[in-house]
Length: 314
Image (cartoon, helix red, strand yellow):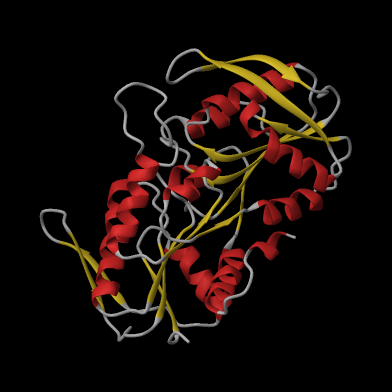
């Protein structure tokens, strides 16, 4: 049997970490994370972790490079302090969109980050809504992959929307959208889009009935919101009533908020895997944040007790 469980938090999302330890009814592990004058990260674990089962919570969101390095250094510090097992809890796994060579002479960064986390000394990874399922195979250590769908589904059901259609923003997301549509007893639609440039997409066709219906667009990441807002405008032009977007990771980079504020979106529903920026909090668009702390906390508890994590989604 491994030693007692201890949970540590990086600086990327302390609010989520606090909710997770509250769910587990545990104190937060004590660690100092600071910067040298030249920007290098310094980590000191301030309590004994020898023989412990340790979980480090750190989404690799903006600023991604700093947060990734902080995670690696925390894992290394815990390994050198003789922790028995170290699980990297990464609610949002950054660099995941570069998961294959779709152009000549480019890096597969999703694999590179997986290698770095393993080399730092992590024994296990717990993450949520990876951009591509195959990223689990990039690790040579066990990966527990969670989905925010149960939390999002509960909220969508509470809206009591009639004539509901779940929309996939592209053909690649149809499988996830179909699963959600089945659980909501809703119809399914998908958007066929073409990439005009690296920063612009064009909606070519809408597959499925959207006229006179309430829509929920489902996706894993909203970054600059370009594709999403183009889809919303096209759906509205085709007679949609209310349009909700249920998206796990609110990256909301660059012109995302301006784009959302200028499109006919009823509400953006996101999780707290990434903390909202002050700009996002001040948006005109209604943004509903749902917590996944309970899901992550329960998964941590089950990992510690060697129980099934997949049964969370049955």
